[in-house]
Image 1: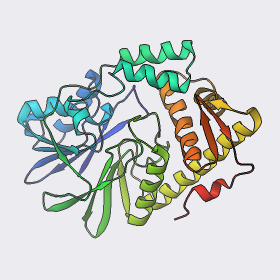
Image 2 (image 1 turned 90 degrees about the vertical axis):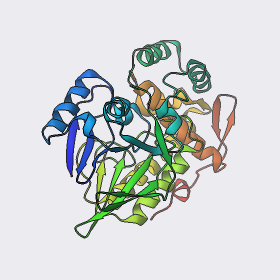
Image 3 (image 1 turned 30 degrees about the horizontal axis):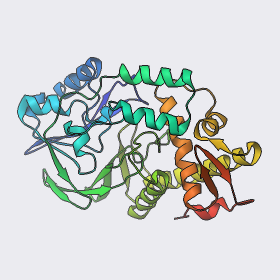
Length: 323
């Protein structure tokens, strides 16, 4: 198994593509469809004697362009079978448009979150200039719990929604160690964005918390993420991210206590300050996810585009498990 590191000037940090060679040539994820990243992947595969046409199968952890963008070109080169969770398959195949392409949904979301004109224009300009999805793909969908034989190993698909609706880990065992390719379910440095990264996800923070609890319960020996270096204590990292979201929820409550009813953009501004490019989407998305979580537990109420606190001194810890 080899890790090929790809440059990525569009999203956070270098992407990882994993190469497994044996009876078949298999990739996990495929990188963003920009020419510099394509060159990185071509050169990285060549180091192991592999070309796009040699790839037999690609397992995609989720639909985001920095993970799926080059899958179509690889498939066209040699007919590789491309697998993705059924919740993300239509976005990868091109049958459906994501928020990045669908302007009417963009406007609806920006109104609901009350983005001011200047950051709204900057975000829309960034999205319009980001042709990153690559070629359409013939996707073979799967669901959580499906298994695959990969060069004598068994991949188990573990559905971990939150960051994306179809985000999936592929768990396997080798040399007595239980490992998993986890995409962006957990990352070694950043906390994966929730709320803005995939606006299709209902109750995004609740779903992501459940996914983190699942990672703790799985207690893998090592996780191989979509960005940066392997994670040697995946359960511990999942607990850290749970604690981060517990703290962030408390910060949102503090904003509402100090400033009264606020819309999503105002809460985002108090949490993150000035934002640019894709973070103009991810910042308020994260604020929305936490406001939504509080609303689902009766701590805040939504009135139009504003959220107001209706419980004095709420017990935020009670909203999160401690696995």
